[in-house]
Image 1 (cartoon, rainbow, N blue to C red):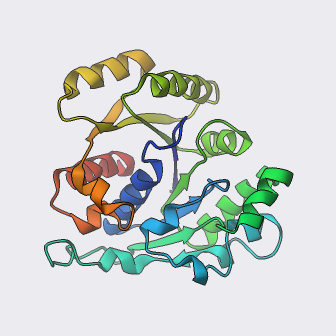
Image 2: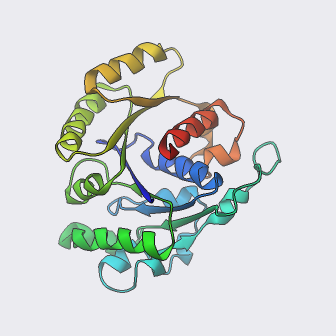
Length: 262
């Protein structure tokens, strides 16, 4: 049974794409076939984490949405990243035989982004594309990296999700915005909703913060991610859990991945 996981934040800058990439890679390494769709069409970027050369991006999600190709043609096999060498010079442990990861990026061309802003696109076609990807690529998990805030695409992603993972920072604006998303998700009857608090300072009382968030939204906190110097230094140039597999932050991603796979 395929599981669709939408990763969303009400505001930008929460680390949503980094979280999506790390969780997707972790799930894939457990022996699953994983797809990632970058539906943040107005400000795409998750491809950078996979070292994807945009000059080689012949086709993108935009091309599918405007009838230039099938959605499968816009999917790139990036499984090779799972074999990367960590910071200690060691390769990750052996993967499952089904381990695979596919990325469907959005275009970085200014003209393509401008067209989206000017004309929009058929959101229904996006849903058709999700289902086609699942079938054609024989996926076990589909991760949707959404656009921050709330729009028609976000509502679709929430509606079709088996799991909605909300990313927020310990910031009052994030607290308010996340409340709006939680309310809408409940109205849409999302089967499972989880919250991750990112970029928490080490001086914070993590237990108290978790209790506050769970009390505020009535939803479980899957993890609180500390603000990590190594993550900042990496600068989205790689997938953290693959570069630093033994880092405490990578272990946290691993625990959240286990929750998603349960």
